[in-house]
Amino acid sequence: MSLIKNNEEYLKKVINDLGYEISNVAILPSGKRELGTFQLNVAMMLAKQYKKNPMDIAKEIVANLDSRFEGVNIAAPGFINFSFKDDNLIEYLNIVLKDFHNLVDKHEEKLIFLDYGGANAAKALHVGHMRSPNIGEAMRRLANLLGDKTISDVHLGDLGRQAGMLISEIKKREPDSLYFKEDYEGEYPAVNYTPADLGEMYVAANVDAKMNKERMDEVREITADIDRGNKRYINLWKKLVDISVVSIKDVYDKLNCHFDLWEGELDSFKDVPSMLEVLKPYLYESEGAMVMDVKENEDNKKFPPLIVIKTDGATIYATRDLATIYSREKRFKPDEIWYFTDNRQSLYFEQVFRASYKAGLVRKDCKLLHFGFGTINGKDGKPFKTRDGGVMELESLIKLIEEILEPKMKSELKNKDEIKEKLAIATLKYADLMSFRNTDYIFDLEKFASFDGKTGPYILYTTVRLKSILRKSDVKEFKITKIENAESLDIYLKLLELPSILNRCYNDKSLNYVTDFLFDLASLFNKFYNNYHILTESDDNIRNNYLGLVKLVYLVIHNLLEILAIDEVEEM
Ligand code: ARG
Image 1 (tube, rainbow, N blue to C red):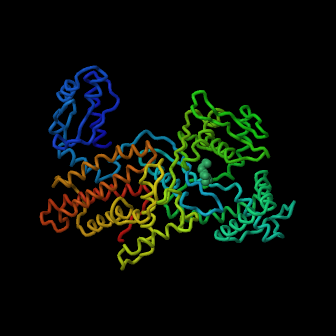
Image 2 (cartoon, protein in one colour):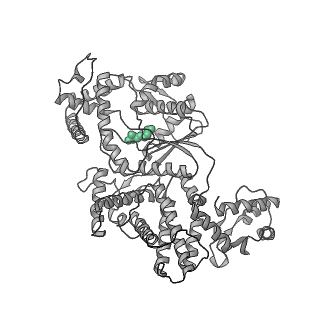
Image 3 (spheres, rainbow, N blue to C red):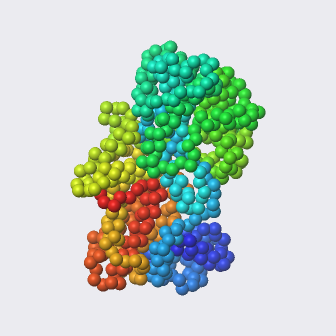
């Protein structure tokens, strides 16, 4: 348990023993450092509740404290200020040095199923596809750190128009292929396209289908045929999906995303019939489609019925999500399922969740939660595009950032390309996680790739510095025996804030508090570094305390980068 939490529990007990009922006591960083490093405003809260004078309550609490704190004082209208004793703080810092987990307050274990990534097969990943894997992966790691068990699923978009497009293009190019021979039941031939071929073929088909109605009809027909279970098409399409997954995996690997399951919409097919059985009592026909009412009395906005089966009898996105929920519930019984997609799918997910609860596809106590995110915009405030107005592919964006980074890097690096790619990914991920999940943000390449300021490269630069000091030091076991100066104290007090920052990220499903914290900590450390000579300090005790600080700061930054899924580098 963290030092703060430990003392919050203690304070809670003291206050409860005085006869006040309180469920939570928060120790907060002090607004007035000269009065102490921490403050409590619990007396003001209790004063309202118990209609008493807050100063009296504060005095009562202070009179009952043991001697663990230093400089306890009361300031109007009822703030209790105090500092931790150096010895207590130092003891705790050494415990954290032994194991970072002592700087984390775990909660009761839950099983969380995470649905993020969501790449669409046979289409290139573009900039807009970055937030879901970045946020989802970091949330998975954070949940694990805080004590949850997790299962992650990439949930590929592997059904839909793009299937019809590609198959129709192959039909045009290879009309004699066995895949187009009706009633063929034998072995299916291998398919020898590359991911790049698929991209090119998709574009070709798309252009033609837009101009040519017959072609579009064919695309629709093939798409519908897949849905009806056409074996030849499904077989061919699965092979195409496998090819495209190779390049999707490549990008997710670069982004350090780990998925326990590589399932997708196609996999939900087998669960559609049994799911529909459960949904049946709630379905009714509307304009030829099968729909389900999901509005509730207390709604203050419109909740249209959810379309479950289209007029032509085909399944849609929603059918597949309902079947997927049903299957996840049966297989895993998760406590919560988290979905990370663009904000534009918020209403959709609300409909799907309501339908699932109403029909009993999941237990009522399984929480289905959608966490939407904002759009990545260019400086013009419109969705981020390439210079000529096209969609920016993620791979091209990474290359572009590498070009900006190149001149800032040391020229004589050994694995320059590898380091450059890591820096580019760090630039992207840090920038992406830095704004609050729900808000849009402006993608400013130059700013995000800067070696100075609130950026990925700045944090990595700080780790390079920290690691270089540690490498040159001869210390075997790091131990802090004294807080040497004000800069050190600032760093240590900052560290004490981490447990509550991690909890805030977990509650909001947003990593911006961690990116802020990393920047603050790196800045505090760099200030310390500029004011003191660490390795050349001649007094052994002082040098060891400095090195203990370096080790501790590195340990914390290292673990936080691990949560954000950002790789470190040794030089840059
Ligand atoms: N493939 C979808 C898209 O591009 C995202 C999938 C999200 N997950 C889900 N279960 N619907 O919008």
